[in-house]
Image (spheres, helix red, strand yellow):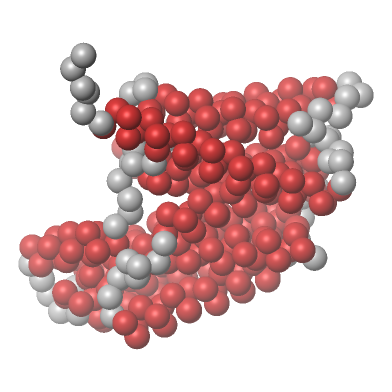
Length: 249
Length: 66
């Protein structure tokens, strides 16, 4: 039960991170060029994402659990390691932080530069469609893997959908990109959760019997938190040392 | 052909990401885990150790300019 709460937390946080990024793009084209085509693009992207979940999800749940956990857990593990690595690189200064205000402004500049042709604004449609679809695919991947390995597809999809509604509602209310949300910290938390669940499931699929059974997931999360904090600290120190002016001897 | 190549490129970027050594390392660690568990040993510690080492090495490469 506790593990399921953690799974849902990971789905909610991952959806929030991705949808905040999608919201920035949709707001930029909607505010600049009008809402009709942009919202149609958003709707079309959600239809495609819904079809992917509705078709792939039930198909995965028919597969045998052991190979499913090995393969899907392994994919989730690689995915989680990427998120963790990127969040550590950003927090230590080796990679630029994801700045929603900068992306919003640059998307608006591009949207202004493209002329409108005809009654339907195809540019807004495509940009909004692509933005939501590409960010949403990462969420779909997480929802499908969590749903398939734990047989909790419906609740994972519901948690993701409610988060999308929450992010969209906040976006409509404040009408600005959600740049104050600590996106990198959220990304690191999601990375740690995905990596930990990925390790747990893929190792189980490979035949490992975890000491403590399902409780081992908490040890894996603690290990990942500790390792991430230490690595981020060491990398930040190294970055500051290399940036510091060299004193001549 | 270009469309197909872009399609595969997108999915490989999606799954493998910026550093392909992470994916390769996970595959090797899982294969070794599978092999030893099917020969009577429960090496549950191998994958967590490999994951931490792989992330640390990947970050080290970035910090040293590869």
